[in-house]
Picture: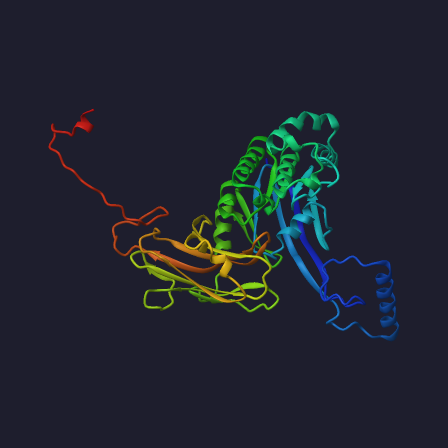
Length: 435
């Protein structure tokens, strides 16, 4: 009989928004006040109480990052946590990692928890890599001889033996992640919590980490909570999924079903032409994405024998370095079937993306993709920085093979290859066949 190792019951986490005080902070999310600010706020509250006046509703507002979240995870399960930015995934992981306390509800965790929530979490910058391994082990409740036994495996997996006695403040982000994951995966926690931090590593190391997490779950019966926007990785690694939306659970069940629900959750009413609200505070944002036929009409249904035209409008308001952009297509299972970047055809295009409104047009040729439904995502980011704008699954279209009514073509590509046929009477086989 399976044993429940994580039990969340009606978890809620709230923050105060728009609290006005002497420093005129417009937005405060869990801000820590100084003693003077706390005393001032307390005296002001006493004054309002004595005079019978209430604080205006605009002064204090409550934002619920999580609300009424309940689920259970059994020992040995690998559960994928999905949702858009701001859905509450990181907040939930911080609650489970005991970094923040829930405002309401109850969490029961059975066993040691190792968390990988962001680069460098749990590392002391002045200590060396070796010293941080022992520090993390001690935090997990391990004894020195237990850590000694695992040290060689950790160092070999992280591939940073040459820098093991160097202070980690001199590590690159990739080296941080290598060591942090090696420590978390090898120090035998009962529960391993991994956020999107693995995206920092190179492809070879990400693949290595995925294999290790699979081994940890399958071979040792440990529980893993995994957050990623890589639907392919989630589908391969996880057996169950939880979809968060606006701080609440929208779907929970087999990972394939949850991924399909997530992939469709961001579609607009007219998924052939999507216009996004203008946000002047953003230095750069997409204004619209649209799909059209050859005659310029919008559409979400296309024949495999016709091209598909995609048009993106990007507005750049304030940039400090080069802006890069890309678009990708995913099938309903979350597999990326096509990724494109304007530098593919013009390496110098980023130098011309300056302040102003830019229109990009791409044509997907006929017979490139197999009949299926595809989701369009667009992204722009700044050199040496994070995403400026990322519209995930903003448009959807369906390809239909109208020339083949006998059976449905399967696969990812729809290219029709020429078949050359040669017929030879029996007994006169070609020389290559006789051999």
